[in-house]
Image (cartoon, rainbow, N blue to C red; front, side, top):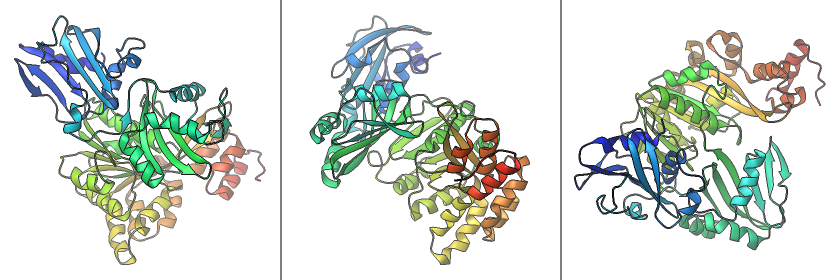
Length: 487
């Protein structure tokens, strides 16, 4: 059953004429000449495209920019006609029973009507652009990032390494500006001209979304695009250990996913949220900069807010979330002291909060949380964190033998022993607890690295390179009989 079928179902009601999905607005039913809201949660344009992508005729999306385009679909409720309009980053779709005219349904929705209802997420969707050729080459290579620099050929990051993108030529400052400007939302053009850097998202057809950072350096304009896959991988596909999946079963508390930039934190978080979306009937609010994975509505109601477009800051959106009846809140980043404090308070007051930090180990994550606060408040925060913290997932990516990359996850489960160590300021003892509490699902990064080396998934040299405690790893590999000479 396609996702769109759930939206079509209300057309079975007597007098139902059309269903409208419009970016920046909820889902509406036209019934007996009147409009009735079926959901109040505003849709992002990318959500509509994602929902339609399962049933779009081949090549259809590239033909609809700026004008209405129709196609038919045989749904379980019978054949329907779907009219799609894209204009810039606005998307609308009207679904009518086959044979229904536009006049009977009240006319096609104006593509820009959402501008008067809510500020749009800055996700560019529409006709193919020249830069899409580079994105498609990048995606065909399975690369994670595309790097563009004035005076240089495009480069990609593939399996963790930088390499020139094949069959491309050097791009000047003017060449890059001509490629980038057409895909930038207007507010980002203004921000770039003022501050010399800006962040936005871009949709490459139905293949993937790109998280984009554009900047100026000494050579001229530059940009980096990180691939956000269109498909949200499941916890099973990512082999996320059950101890980490169990964090989703809590009704309140704080779960932190940490690691360096590009370590797969967003992918892990998306899988955990998708797991909840599949298993529970909750209200989830995500606050991100920018929105990365776009979640379809399964069993949960999901509102996704984007810093800079649908909210001014993480802390503003988090404060507002407390008045929006959430069960679960996802914070793209615990960026400052105030956001961290509100997140801890939110976790304490009966909500499940997921957040990210750029720390390398579970123990250092706890220290980073506490050290943000003034010395006279750290005792109080330590006590609050000891009660609210559920667990920490610290991760990094390693090159796999034979190609590709694999995520290495360190998992801290906060039991009574760990809670006491946090409260008493003895976080340096947490690694010892993790070594002796493997029966509850705890695992250290070094133990996982050694297991991957034994399984010949990861080379010893790569494991040593990515280890934080390198001496301990070298000792562990020696005990395991792995021949390796540290360099």
